[in-house]
Image (cartoon, rainbow, N blue to C red; front, top):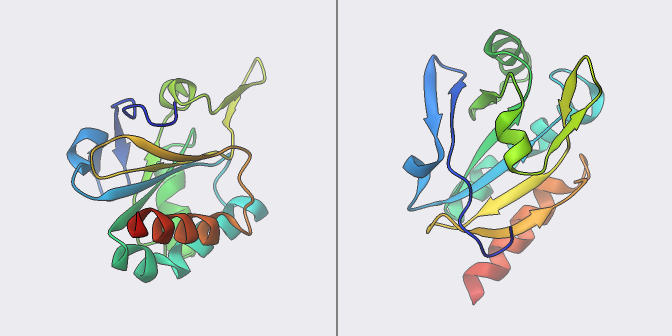
Length: 150
């Protein structure tokens, strides 16, 4: 998937909107998949992206989180932790599956904690498999800085 076009998708987002990946071209995008709203690791990761949002924006990057939770759950999670970026509801896990980021437990599915840094041309510039909830945002910031120096 690295250096390949990121698979396009459209999903419902917080804020009553629909997010389409192809509309994000022109800026870098941090597309992070996470298992479940309002759980310790997912909260830590989301809050780190929240806290680093200005630095990410200064480097031309937007953040979008994706899980299999519904929009209502995302709204509660975003409100509780003042998350300023969209959370997308991948209810059936189809988008997570296209990104190799789904865990199927038979009766239920969870997204894997994987992050994809997508460049302004819509190509996957970096992949973080089994991303660290505590370090992921910092890793993305460091890589964005390196990519801009090229």
